Image (tube, rainbow, N blue to C red; front, side, top):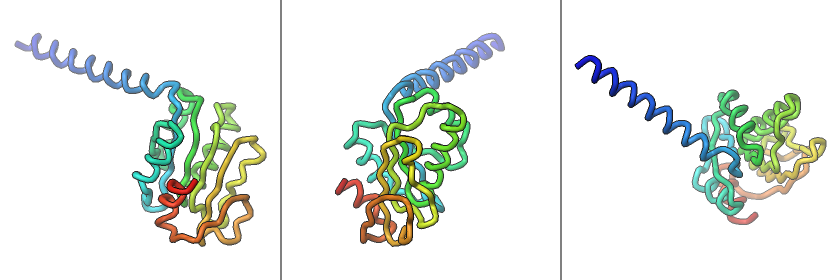
Length: 163
């Protein structure tokens, strides 16, 4: 009985590993867009998923503290874009610097939505296509972009619907 139980546990483990590898391989080399949430986890998932679908990209929402996950994701998916909402715009900028400094694949494009006025989201020096959309929290922003008169919590929806 102990042999059968150990065999089943071993096979379950093999199944779980095979399943995880299958999931990872479906992400490999897909065109993806990695989204970063704002402060306190604010993020309009529906708007982000629709934004990705309009561009034929697979949406992946990354948590701000998942550096190893990001490195693996970028190395396995060289055709990626970044999307940062509010505080997430600063995380997207950090990922660009990290990729550049470590000679990793650079994003094909970057979209920031609702970045705060002091967040540097000018990616011109990296030669990356980018679009920045600012609301009132971005007044005084020195980075290029479009200012939109909508509340901060509605700008993701507005950008998805209009750009």
